[in-house]
Image 1 (cartoon, rainbow, N blue to C red):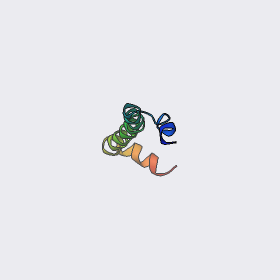
Image 2: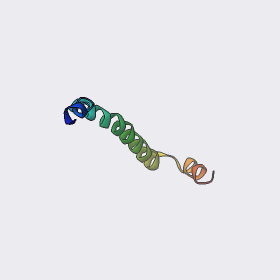
Image 3: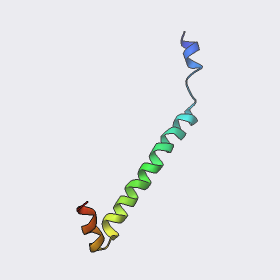
Image 4: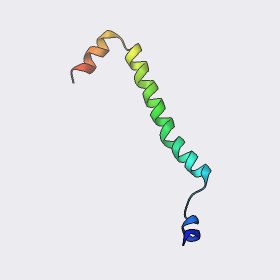
Length: 51
C-alpha cells in the first residue's frame, strides 16, 4: 500500500518549484507595496486613502 502511494508523491524538485511559484509573486507584490508606500507623491497617497 505504501509503495502504491509513493508513486503519486512528486519529487523534491517539484515541491521546490511549487513553493517558488507562490513565493516569487508574493515577494514581488510585497516589494511593490513597499516601493509605493515610500515613493508615491503626497497627492497620490491622498487619493488612495479615500476610495
